[in-house]
Image (cartoon, rainbow, N blue to C red; front, side, top):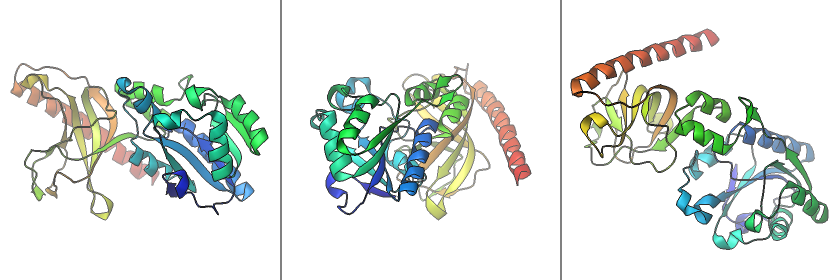
Length: 322
């Protein structure tokens, strides 16, 4: 999948395209439905399947006070989009100046003159142009004038409600990993690095690890069954684990951490720059304050036992499928 980070990077000989436009935070099941149709139509028309998205998310430019936490930061979003079969992603820099672009100018400059779009596919809530002035009906009308056709998709539903990035953020914020998984079509994960200043050396021999500060979306405070991938590529090692997200009230205030106890641990190479990917499977319990560290230790053993049973069942089911 080609990634173009400005209109100027799009080659003049790209050819005709079938396009979809949006933020695509999460690359959830609704997004995937539209993307599959774009790819199928592009193949049928001997065109390129192209997705147009924005960086940073418009909310972070236009409403920074909201401090929007993303399901998928841009690098993760691009990784997931790269697995779909798209030919290219156009990642447009979003600024206040760009936000002032009219719907007509956007369609003319981006869709007609740069991408040579013949078909454009959008969800029913799609809005674009200065002040979100235009909707899918406007897109259809502009397409008739500029030489492309537009198709609108109804929202995909999960649990009797439409799938949306905002619903997924709410589910994650509540610690509801089951609903999150159903809407994303995959497990929720975050990418980070080890917390700084904790003495990580070349060979790490302690079965707990803390994530560095993470500014995007994390699940609700509590204890979770997780997988933690350490490293990347052929050298990556994945551990099953139990992760606590929260302020660790047993140890006093101001001690927020995302701390994972690694099961069946063996020493690994680790530095403060080693990439980590934490995948959240199930919430075991909410965060709670214990009378003393010994009481906390007893509860941790119980959490680990529940996680061990969950992982054993997963392995058994996986072997049966094979």
